[in-house]
Length: 146
Image 1 (cartoon, rainbow, N blue to C red):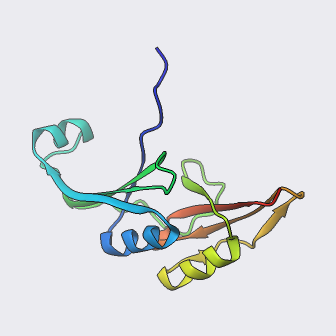
Image 2 (image 1 turned 60 degrees about the vertical axis):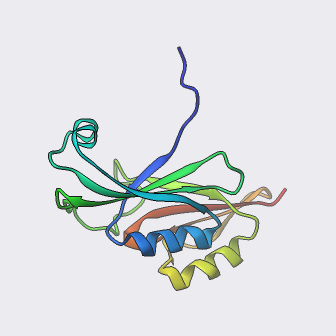
């Protein structure tokens, strides 16, 4: 049996409100927020006494979702610097297709977005860049030209 679809991408954050504001500015829609805890949460995460705030956001086309999680317990574990380069094994990023790359970057800057490198053009088909969002989250942005 094959998978049916990719349901969502999950990102653990410390500042839920800032992360939601960032992704809403990008154009995602907040579907809802809740808190999970208890035996189910402990069992599926492999952690004890989980209490976690969850926010689910959906892309405008309705096909992709992003789950933000803020762990209240157990306390979040720091894994090192948040400004690692793109080529570190295990580093993750989420790529979004946008209609106007320059406008998108400008709108996200007040929400803490910083370009990792520069906006670059691939042949005559795409303009691309990587940014860091709240808490160092890697975000890729791509504008199709042709």
